[in-house]
View 1 (cartoon, rainbow, N blue to C red):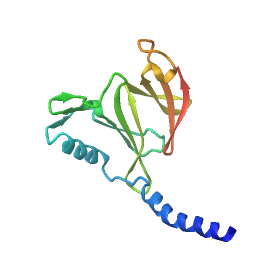
View 2: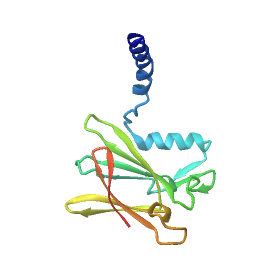
View 3: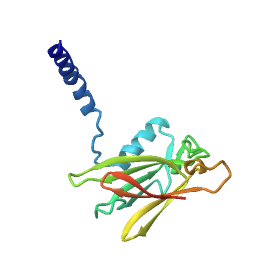
View 4: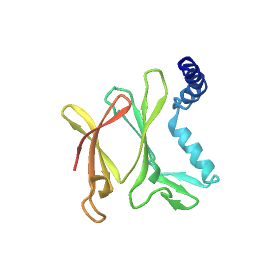
Length: 159
């Protein structure tokens, strides 16, 4: 009976694990072109991108230029920032990897961010909806400070 369970578990792992491995994110050579192509299709070709749609900066302190995409800079079928809500606009964070290309490491709905130096490292201070700091609508905006280490966001502070 025990060996039958082990056999079933191994067969299950052989079937499921390749699907999980395939679900991992792929490296993009040009995330800006990828994003623009996506929105051009979803807006039926009636799209324009503002000057601050894509920003290049080293967000993870590895000396490689990363890319931050601001979906609030999209005008789709005449509507500016169609994916923005009262909680902010979606921002997509891509880090450049040494192997070449970029990985999307986070998507956050924020009002905006400042990129500042703290304790010798550059950090993101993201301005977010008050609920992310356990506050109610109308109260002070939540500011979450994160450092990007490799491909992970590490929260430093929240106020």
